[in-house]
Amino acid sequence: GAVVSQHPSRVICKSGTSVKIECRSLDFQATTMFWYRQFPKQSLMLMATSNEGSKATYEQGVEKDKFLINHASLTLSTLTVTSAHPEDSSFYICSALTGDYGYTFGSGTRLTVV
Amino acid sequence: KQEVTQIPAALSVPEGENLVLNCSFTDSAIYNLQWFRQDPGKGLTSLLLIQSSQREQTSGRLNASLDKSSGRSTLYIAASQPGDSATYLCAVTDGDFGNEKLTFGTGTRLTIIP
Image (cartoon, rainbow over all chains, first blue to last red; front, side):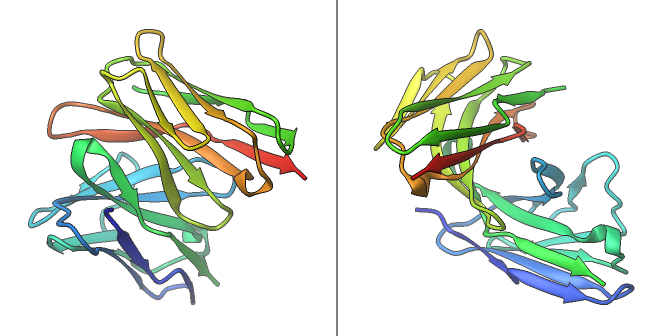
């Protein structure tokens, strides 16, 4: 079945630095990928939708310059958290659209900003 | 705006019992509904996908039903096991064609007591 690989699984960074999270579709081409954020004990919240070769579509309230999304190929989408602050600490999950509008999710990235 | 609610928020049952998790959504114009499982600190695992034209899907001990007109879905777990302990999320896909979105429920944290 469709597999999405997300790296890193955990990252700790200093406040003010940038962190890049990668999401790869391993055995299929993902023209559309999604990035979610999850706070403790809360459900997933969609941050943005990325389409290969075009600019990402961000949800209301998500800062485009803060969360840079690049979907340069059919198998790779990246999320870069720029100038990270402690409030950016969260669990980030990517997913890719597969057939029948099903979704496959990455394993998630736990970001801690200190 | 689509809203997805799951009841109960938490559930504890003895091992071996059958149980039902509930999911409701406010806008019945959906393409499909998915049930996911999430273990602590991990990504999502897709359990069952029900297309809007379908009434139910089964996989092993899991059975999911969909009543689109009433905006409800249930996930039935038979003969529960300690390994079933996790948070279960339902999500619906809706939106305009070509601009589909996935909206998640609030989740049900399930604990199976050995």
